[in-house]
Length: 432
Image (cartoon, rainbow, N blue to C red):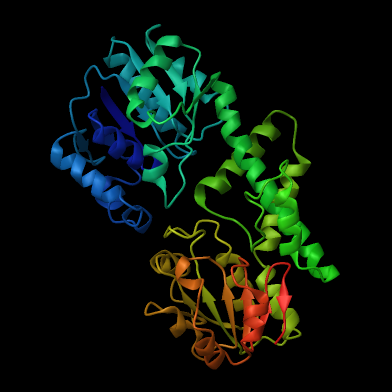
């Protein structure tokens, strides 16, 4: 099929590369706010496993053409089969403009795939801009995960397909047939249902995380190790283990804005959600939990101290820091005059761009232990695999107060305490 992909989101880049890799003729048009000349240099894209290599291979093979917004659109855009929209939530105007322009130019049948996180009902509004009955819009919500985008797209666990037109459904199935061979992955439903389901899924995941964080706070107060509680809850088959890990808050561009979009949908419908508001409040509160543990340990005497931080990205496998817990944590530490030495395998460039040259921040690119030199305590914020099994003897010699604040509960409290360090996690603690 002849496919045009529009947008500068991770979903757009992944769709362009994946569809071209299986024989479709693809023209990718990044959004004017982030043309390809800039997009190809950004950390979150260049560090996404396999993606840049797949894009380059598709361009070499001639299956993919990428245009800059300044230049003429890439490829032959006449009489296409599919317009794939993977735009940011604030780019609805661009989506509508693209659909209107294509409708005036093309009389042949067309399927518009709405892969963007727009308000519920936007797919129907896009279809109203099309030219005739053979031109249809379907909803295919973005289900990608940063750090695993290529794997999730090409070996999907599920696609939520919102379509009320049999021919359009068949065309989308054919478009993605190469990725649907192991087992049936399409869940077909009406368009509005698909749009709302995607938001509802992330709302449920956020609720589980926030509830577990709330329980971890209670466990701290009662002197209970929250790991026993988590194991007991997860063993109940009605609950399971997924997303039951307490931590110092979640972030990320897609997850966070999906929750905001769900809150907007509820507010616009006149059915504001007290539950979702509480979930968001708990998450923001948790982003400063490591600071509060540091404050409690030193009884508020923080000025002039130095803290090492491992991890700035909102999750392992990405260079993004959008809504990451490290941002409010840094602000809280700096407000008390605390010096910070920070290491991250991928996100230092993004953090430097965000905070600039702050006098209380030292970015350590060499290795994680360089961040601990001269520090009183270590805060683990992002659970990169390179942090899971540190040299405890070396850490003990580097940290002045031998204090470990584990924001992801990746360390064993008794093991750490057995090495002569003080351990404080989320609902977990141990002393030497």
